[in-house]
Image (cartoon, rainbow, N blue to C red; front, side):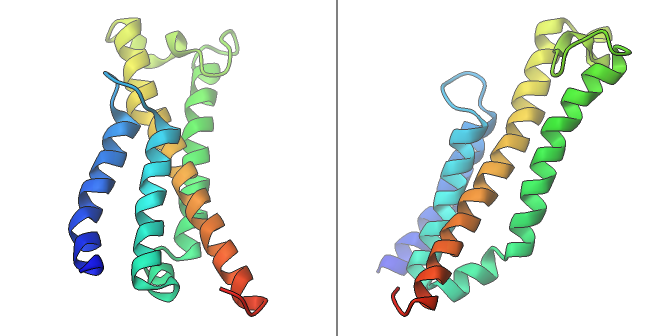
Length: 145
């Protein structure tokens, strides 16, 4: 009964995590959405076992998502500096190329909600999942679970 409930609820939990991560109309952001996504993977691992959970979220994927999220965040920040030829600060959204085509507030919304927050969410989710599995395996090494 628990496994069936988790299988049914998992896609909705993950969809809600993505909504919180990119939803600009309400509370939330990359950190909160990333934690919700990580909680869904942790729930899967707790329900179906650590080995099956590790196969669903291998450490190589966690490392890739942590790195990619950091590169997205830093890349947008450096893009603003490079595009302004060093006149703008790191993550100064008014200096991006989008400001040439759309108003500054729209460009800022696109970069924050759709790019920066996704990068933060990816990094947070992968970090928490990796931390969970590090703690699970540490317990196994000591003979406790």
